[in-house]
View 1 (tube, one colour):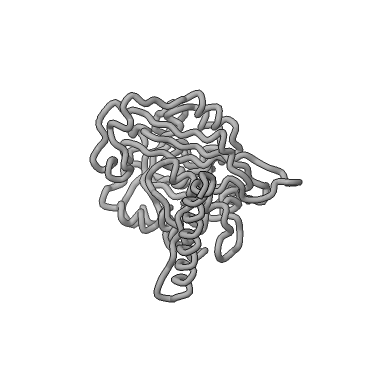
View 2 (cartoon, one colour):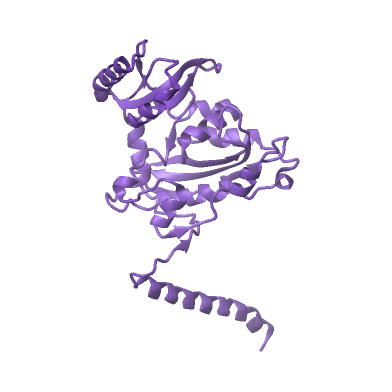
Length: 320
């Protein structure tokens, strides 16, 4: 056997092994007793762009030192830019522009963060984020998407003011996963429901996986998930706030009514509202205000609730 044949032999064996595994997967998938999950293999190209109006999106994900958005530090950030058509179909990943960086938080990571992310203090030691590169990439986007954007956006706005001027979408809250028979909104569960698995809780892996999921039509409606986000961002929404300083014992009742404990600040970080809040459509404001006022009256709570429109550019931010 000559040298060239020897070089090709391992490749041939790899192809033969892949064929055997694929046949085994197809056999298992035919049985009602098994489900086959395939590893997410990121694609760079999803569709033909010819003759289509294209926009720029960014899938953004962070890993941090904690859950408190006012104090947590970003230790890993991934930004995956891509082109999408005006019907919401992803077209192409801009591979050369992907940003993935790390930041030394200046203190040891908690055991919980280490367990969830797999990051160590040694991984982050001496690392710094390239803020200029992050800002250039963010400034180029027509839309930034994060899974649970109400967390990532707040952290990113603390990192750089460029994120304040951009519309953000949330693939967790703005896509009707339950209506599409995908019962959970966690990224891993969405993947399993679509027949995929991936290495979760690392920013670059989560971001790449999310984009692959957005490139599949939803199973019931056949809509592009990205279009669900874009249509939701066009809706005029209102925030209804309960009076401040409501008794702690009413937290469960507020939660059952669809309210969440929230803070709203101005551009300087000063708190404007700090209470239970619910987001509704314009058509729902009157009835929801009447419902809340009745609840407050029966609970013996003084003070008047308030309602106001949400600026679409402020969705998922401290200012919402």
